[in-house]
Length: 173
Image (cartoon, rainbow, N blue to C red; front, side, top):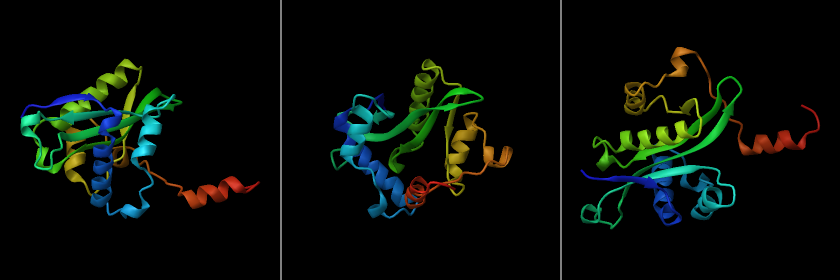
């Protein structure tokens, strides 16, 4: 299949939001708890100080889906800083629609993201992958990724908004 990888534009954000909702369903996240919306994506990605970068995989018009959509996947990432390694790219999502998997789209999105990160002086690319997503873990391992959970025993912690709000409002911990 022929496809093109290009930078996301504001006109793509409705499809990106649809992908985000598909990912939420895959991870059993209630859609009502998804805080992001098209306007937030636009503000965060295309404002005066963009908070993320995004690339999309687009299929040719003659191969559009039955619903008329032409995007097959995307990757969304941002830059972070690691005191030991310097600038890093944190991958929030790398997603290819199920009917387009196995066609090289995920690899092409990953390559484009890696090129961008390297050109920006990044020393690492990091992302979280659900332990239940063996196919995704395999995809990353085949590309040289290292599973820090099993290799180094790192644990991921999350502090939810209601706890964060409580921490912020306390004068002492």
